Image 1 (cartoon, rainbow, N blue to C red):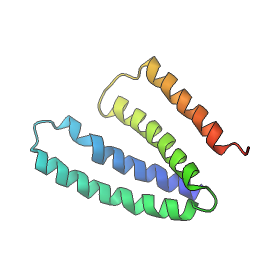
Image 2: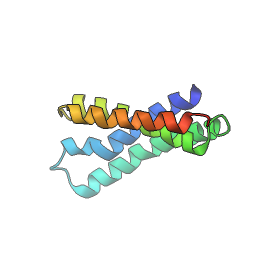
Image 3: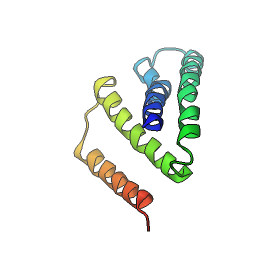
Length: 109
């Protein structure tokens, strides 16, 4: 669970680094790039240990899959509450299909 917690914190930072500047479209591009890099530093401070701790318990493929699912969850909350975008039914269908992929990746065949 430590891996999942660290990946979740990491994804919160990365979502703000990648998309937080969209609310500030009038800010100079160089400024938002530098701020985003600064935020991304903290993302790596959580992501690297998460993968180090998780590797062995999870395969690299499983770690990446966990990270992608967390990313979608974090991004969904971020886009609705921070960017004030609507969450549509087709996004939900797409996410359900990604969760189906999780089943296949974690299933012991």
